[in-house]
Length: 219
Image (tube, rainbow, N blue to C red; front, side, top):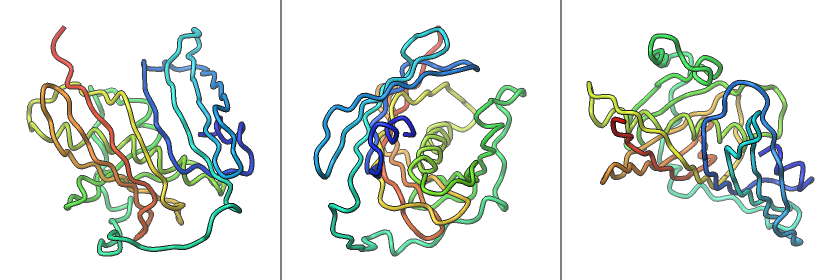
């Protein structure tokens, strides 16, 4: 997202479509943004990420708009009927994976805070103080909340289920230091699970999207 912003200054992200091609090991990663289209209202930027060995690890497309070109109307939509999710402090820490933890889990410290018709809720504290990067915060919560509903579909029988993609549409900016991602398993068939994603900040819906997970068999 930051790479896309650098290619389209003074614009705000409204959507992200990402494809995760391979895991990125510890170390440096290089992000290369390319402007695909630049109009008066909308800019579309493609972003490629390369690991320290120069291999393509991620490809994404980010749409950004000029706020001054839009009519600033607000409407709560159907989300107004839902309460704010519980806070991070009262949640249950995620278990350590394999006993040794995982870098992203150790860094972000996600916590399970609720389960309702929106799905299973994972709360995160935004790991920066810099304002104006709500879309980045929403991306973190959305990516982290995809796994729990898939893992929970078969209790006691964990199966590796990486998510190779994530699509988000941003509907506002987080207003506090916490974001909560809701993941809801919509359907699983043929080893592919489809998860609906919502990201909330307090009582405000700030992003909605979808991701798929692949139930990897024994090798």
